[in-house]
Image 1 (tube, rainbow, N blue to C red):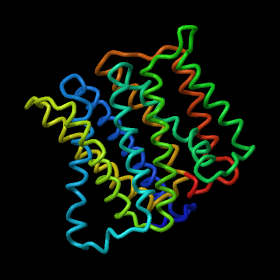
Image 2 (cartoon, rainbow, N blue to C red):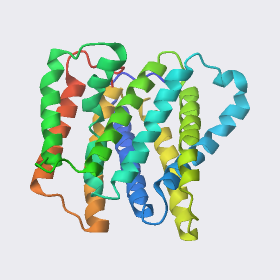
Image 3 (tube, helix red, strand yellow):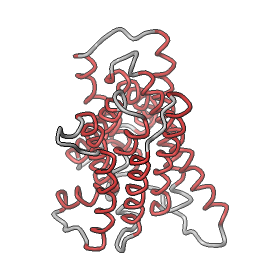
Length: 297
């Protein structure tokens, strides 16, 4: 893994470049989500996820062929599988949910991941949640509740599916953190793309339907740009630490809201806006609580 550069007053250009790359990654990711929402009316969700990981897998093939079998030897197969399956499930449920709700709402639930990471760590490491993180968690989940707006009739199934994308992302984040202790970055990405591709193949086969010709450019865009976001985001870590970079992910809510408005004419209501503000506040406080270093993020 690349080492982050120490940020100080002497290198404001590196700071600006790192944050700028982080925001660019989030913007590109938001356009991929919008493309996925557009495609969901033309092809099955499994086709979108398959195209995404197939193209990413093809992009890393040259690395594998160049470095041989030794480059992919690992002593952490189970952790790779957990990380790959959870990451793929995150995208699958995210694309599935946005068929039935505004893009910004689905994105909000996916971005509950920083709030869910302490809970995943509790299960994964049997490590208690620090008291300093309880208040941010309460704020964040209050925001989730405000957006869910449960009634006597219950909570929408699609909202729960959207929230499960945040669970998948949180598990993937903790899995990546664990793998980064012993595995090089290229190997982590190789297994992530490969396992995700294998995971989604049965869903594609079971739900196969012909793909319209006019959907192919959009599918190509999803795969190529998604791979580009991985490359750009990795580059950003060379300029700023993850404790600074992680909060840029919340720009996805801004970009998704703008895309929702410009493409589908959807404007979030007041409770949703307040819920977003609480989730973002809770997430940022989680990132800044004592003991939350680069590894935790």
